[in-house]
Length: 64
Image 1 (cartoon, rainbow, N blue to C red):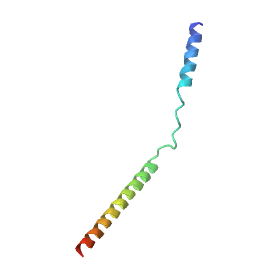
Image 2: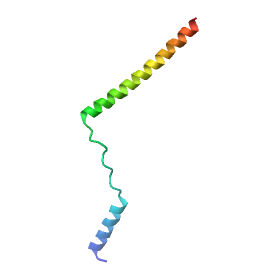
Image 3: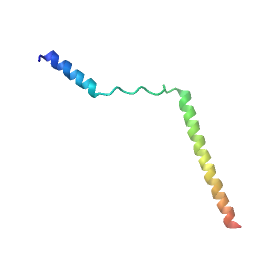
Image 4: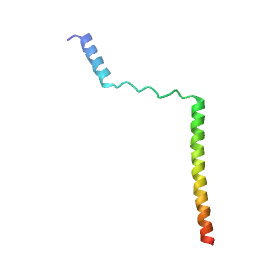
C-alpha cells in the first residue's frame, strides 16, 4: 500500500465518520427575527397579565 492509497483510505474513513452538516431550516432574515421577538414578548406579557389578574382576584377575595 503506497502513500497515495493510504491517504485515500484515510480520507474515505474521515468522510464516512463525519456526518454531513444539516442545512439550516431557513435563512435568518431581520423580519423573521423581529417577528419571533415580538411573539416571545407578547407571550411573556400575556403570562404576566394573567398572573397579575390572578393576584388581584386573590387580594379581592381575601378582603371581602
